[in-house]
Length: 146
Image (cartoon, rainbow, N blue to C red; front, top):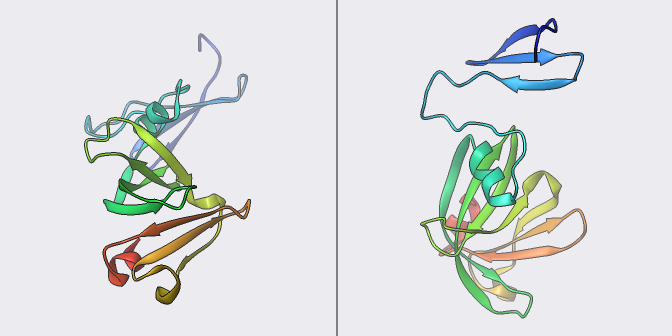
């Protein structure tokens, strides 16, 4: 961004620099080194989520029902990215590799399932595409938290 005129405005604790000629937004480096840095392009979902994550609301183990109907134990966390929330899961709490990330703004409904049908603590996440992801928490109370 050589000698082009820049318009600057403050957004929270970060300074946002807008370059109207290129229609690009860049964030100035965070004052707090513990804040996650944003990257312009991430080669895969895992790096993108880690680079842009700004907050984790809840984390822990849930069981998820696979396409074959088997229940698999996975480590989940809700992650905020630029104001959008995702439910991200890994095989272990070490978060070595993201297995999937459900974009919660793309859901049509999240509801606790009837305990007679699936057992206690089961909730479903229905996507806009009508695909339903079933998850099982340790209890009804834990399912409500998620």
